[in-house]
Length: 193
Image (cartoon, rainbow, N blue to C red; front, side, top):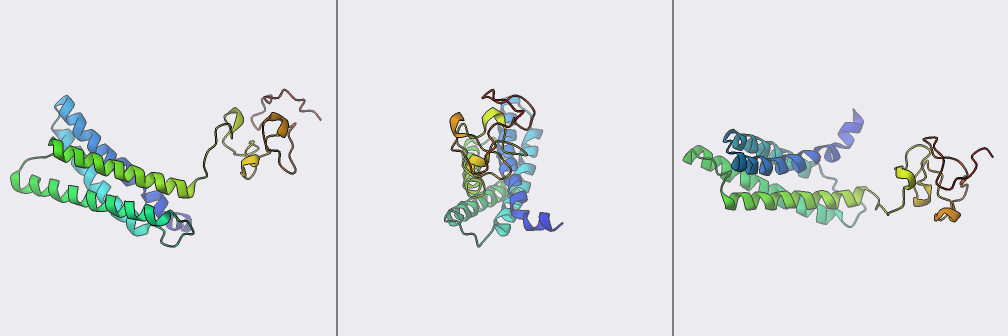
C-alpha cells in the first residue's frame, strides 16, 4: 500500500490526460453523429478530469533535483485553472440557461487548448521520469527487461551490445549469448561457448 501512496502523483496524472481528451472527443462525436446524450458524457469526463487535475497538481512532487520540475508544475497549474474555468462556465450555462455549450465553437477551441496543455504537461513530466530513447537502443524489439540487451544504454539487467555489432561494449559484456527469448541473435554467433 505504501507503493500506491508514494506514487500517487504518477498514478493520478493519467486521469486528467485521458478524461480531458475524452471530454473533447465526446463533444465532437456528438456534433458529428447528432447524439445529444454524448454531450452529457463529455460533461462527466470534464468534471472528473478537472477534479483529477486538481489532485494531480496537489500531489505533484515539490522537491525534485530536476530543473524541469518548475516548468512542469507551472503548466500543470495552468491546465488546472483552465479545466476549472471550463467546468464553471459549462456548468453555469447548463444550470441557468438550460442549454449545453458542448457544440459551441469557442468552447471547443478552449477545450482543445486544455487538451494541448495537459498533453504538454504530461510530456514534460515524462521527460523527467523516463530516459530518452535512442533509435537502435533496443535491438530485436527488446525493451531492456530480463536478459535484454539494454546495458550499453545504462539499463540494469541487460547484457549490452558488443562493439562489433554497433554497440559501445560494456565491462562484463557477454556478447555471444543469445537474447532472452531464446531466438538466434542478429550476429549469428554460436551460443554454445
